[in-house]
Image (cartoon, rainbow, N blue to C red; front, top):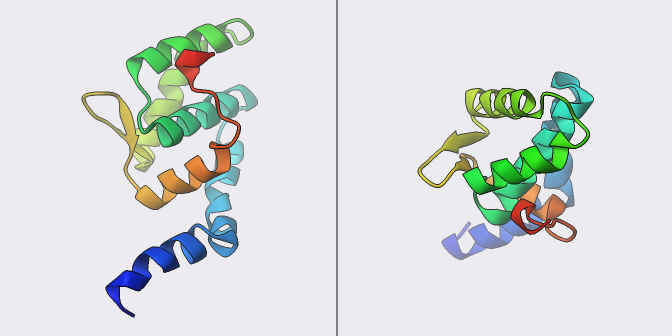
Length: 123
């Protein structure tokens, strides 16, 4: 394989239909490990980090406001979800906020949400 083929294989195989099936276990694990409220918040955090490139402190405030209307203890859920994600290596805290550690997982999440996702600070 030549270097120029890497991008093609990455986008067509790893991020293509077969790769998406392999990576879908990451999403199903969320539903197994978290409550329904935590899972919704978790997916929103991951979508924000994937599509926007970072889950910022401003986005965190926006998610608290959005979900705080219907979910009690939303701040506790956010802390729990972020703790699980950092412990499991999904994301890491950097200066600007939380970013994905694993490029493939980030791009898979972005591809899953990009078409219909509205950034938290624009809602």
